[in-house]
Length: 398
Image (cartoon, rainbow, N blue to C red; front, side):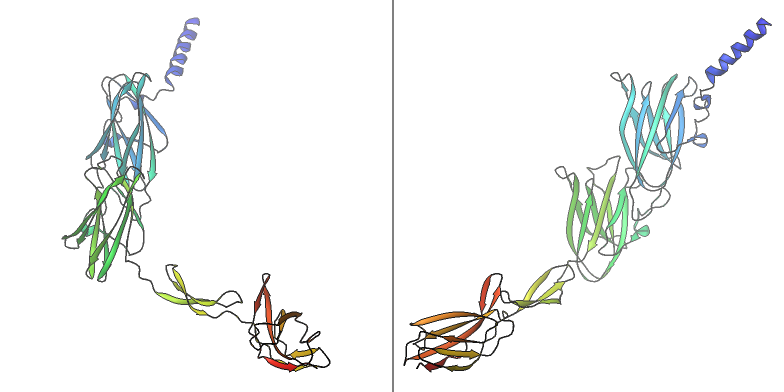
């Protein structure tokens, strides 16, 4: 009985030791594309190289074009090569052994790919393990591209409209060229390009004849490439070709934005008017669709009306009585007396409120002719804005 229990205990211990080991990960089950393991982005996949199985294949699918970041780790250095769905080679990566870390490690590997299914071939030394994590960042392209269909020839060019910004990705291996077609009337046009790597962009006719060649160089100070070029075109349909320049053969490709625009010519329309005030001239406002505007057709300042003296007399010795017609919206009036019709000397001024339309002045010299005039004023921000003087009236004092 004790011997039976001992055997059962040994079996249980062996099962507990081996239960957590995925033998299929290193038993030759994944050594072809047809038997590749499927991978989910953001997860970590591990494996083991045995003496008779030093290759594993991992299958992954991109929902859209973008960049894939590989984080490689292992007990010894190993290779990770990316293949297309049709087994064509795309690019290889290598995780070297780092003695400071005590393992193989690399997290700098980035590759730009179009949407579709791919395979990662992992190969290393026997009796060593590895782990791989992949992260995906979509390029959010304006037009869908995959590893089975793209716009890499003029015949597959995506049609675009003027004045709209489009986004695309140039891949290192399977998407080095993008074509877009556009139709224009005769005129001058601007091509505006911005990218995170230096890129070329050329213009072609639809039968493949080159029209113009341009280049957006990478600027290390800004951290991106940017360029705007003008081109004159006859009416017709053309293609713009964007591709990585010879000095930008980066694995991660280039993410770009571009637009084709016609130079703007201002066309102004009357968009409003500003009324005159006592301190500012009025004017009309003319605005362009781009937001530019200008003022014109200036109007005179708003004026305080000129009063009219309705009656003037000398009711008694040394007095002058003056009445006038009320001025609308006046804040008050100024009355001026002088013994000189030019009001150059012997001049006296008095102010009365807007409630008054007359005044009787005193202490004038008897038997003397006086000249009298009145003007209204308006108080604006603590300043008196005067109207014109009334016609001058004369009176001889008693």
